[in-house]
Length: 591
Image (cartoon, rainbow, N blue to C red; front, side, top):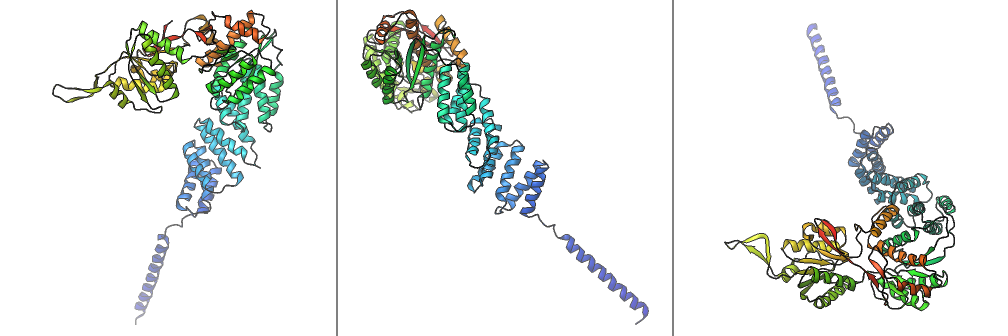
């Protein structure tokens, strides 16, 4: 073998070796880079979050929970996703991911952090009720500092600008931190409105119910700033449902009463009347007990209330027994010479309505559509008895269920509804005619359900004048029924748009004091208290017995609810108003 061939052969091996090395390198570099594990993703996300690179941090945590669903870092990643969503102002996403954590164990400190974040995100959504809920839960976790949560709760409640908002929070979170602070703010509001007695009562309740709360010093300071009232010449008792499901109605009446007592009182003079208020709690026994306490302990000259029919009977019997004048708001009839009924009785409403329908509108034939409830049945019976007395005729009555929403079967059955047919015999779509008609249709029900009935009557082209009780006086009648309500007639005792001076004054003063519109319950409370006050201002009354006699003498009182006085049987002498729906508004027709 020649030297040259040997050299050439050696070069070949080198070339082959070089190519082999290149091949190995290509295999190495062709491998994909190693994927980050869950710990790496979590660490990267933490670093990015600390640098406020929230979007990229969120991406790391989302990838961790997607790629490693069984990772021990899963819950920590979800928690940090909640932080990221919060910082990015994506509250719904934050709430969703944070709620997923409740299916696992959370240490107390972490639980408080989750509650805090949930509260922040609901606050971002302007849902303050849920924000207070979550902040409040955080306060309840023992052993964890909660100053930040308490500050947030106070900030939300401090921003409430109406008594209704504060009452709602106080009721919803009664016994909790937010409920007590709302009660304190309510007491401050009531004091600013000039009702120091009610503010003091609220603060006494606050001290009893929320002893351990940090706003105790504020409550004490507020209480000390309220001067003790001078001893009034007369004490009038008030019994209303001021707790429980009927509290909103009791509050309405009480505001009317307090407005009447506060008017014309001079801070420099000894007040004529002080109110001694008792909560009936909707219980007949509590109402009866309150009458006895007010008579024996408070030495009241008279009692205003109760409001509910179920509490009035026992309270009335006790007042009659103890010879204390009692002005009840109940529609249930009470008998006794010390008993006065300041309410819109069903019989008075029906008599007023039927008289107007037969004498002024000259209606002759009538039907009654009524709910299967004690209210509906009672009014229906009164109506079918009164119509013949006024020369009218009852064509029929139709009953429906109290929670019913579809009244088509009742309407079609009574009015014998048929579809209108084309000349070729085909039925026209949504066009009907009735083979039976009446002049007046009485529906004793609440305004929102009446609106549904009127709408369906309108759909089936039922003609006639619709007649109702004071329960029609609500926003749902016009807003839901619209054109179907046009021309409808109902009876009531209070119309806030009345131009008479007493009503104008009452509405203006009520708005100024409570920042809302008064309704019938407020008007009844105002009239009852003002009726008593006018007598006590003009007469020298020395006993409850004398006061009872004076109450029977007044027949020319100008009440905002039409009250003029009381008859010998204790029933209110009242002028009712006939209201009509005209051009989408309520207008007063009579008087």
